[in-house]
Image (cartoon, rainbow, N blue to C red; front, side, top):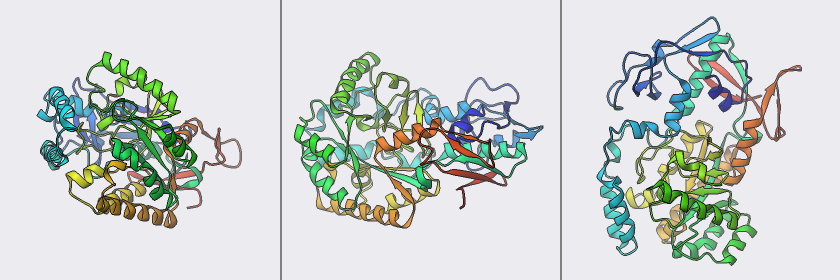
Length: 449
């Protein structure tokens, strides 16, 4: 189980063993691992809850460190997998389904969507998502449960080694404190027509973004626009097949659609993918021939598919890298929350930066045509530009994050000289960092800070 820690931190392999104490339960449930970490899975601890409500049993009290071994009442691999792959949402639902989640109703909604006035659609969506405040997990507006859990495991392993400081490879190139990516999903013809002006807005603060294009039925993508996006150093990705909300309804149909999606990806030269409506099924991702995906929210209380990966960092789903959506998309902010300020975005960015995470934004060209929304987006861009000036934040295209994270995943720390050093492709951009033990937790900083 030490692999989950070394894979994430890229620290030396000499971590003490994690052992599971006792027989794990037959059924999963919720419990905590310290006061600030919610876990879902099997355990050998006394109690597990079916819901995240009220106090949860703290399995950290059943953890021990002795003889260079960390003994856990849980399987760390399973817990992290259950969070990242949203199994807690599937398993803990008890087989029930919200009325808004029913496939037939979703199909009817998408068929009528383009016929109904926008005000009617917003009203229906607000009703469907109206219970979002009653959801207790994942945290909102930011959730980094996976990273907190991994940091606690590292702290336990350091205690078992009897060390107060441990080296690892920093998360971002050149020691950047965190990372920001901007993405634009193009949903309809009006959004397609606005892409050039949106690139102008982004370029005004020297921020490049990726444009996710729907390849079938919604609109025809002019070759001139593809050429412009490439010439201006923006990025092109694939956005679903036809954005009808049914991509994951049936496995056989998904495979048929995936073949066409992959063909369009090759035609467009796209490395990345995002599904329509952020619908997702990780178990089917192996049919998609993309390097990375951007369809999983960190915390998805106000998305059509509830859940969230509980992570602020990229992670692998098989051979594909997931770049989770860690901020609220513009449509939800403007039309569900009726908020035209950037307060929520700045709170999410600040919290993600403090966790050294990936702040990923989704702003549709379709929804910033209106002057009030465009003014809000300009304010966000100005804030991002100021953050870049004041903090060492890496602003990158999604494909750059994908390339870096893959390089980092193959790097290693070696100790064959006067001190630890980093080896592997891309090492010239990597920075050595240290975790310092502080009670039951660790503080993380690059070398020299």
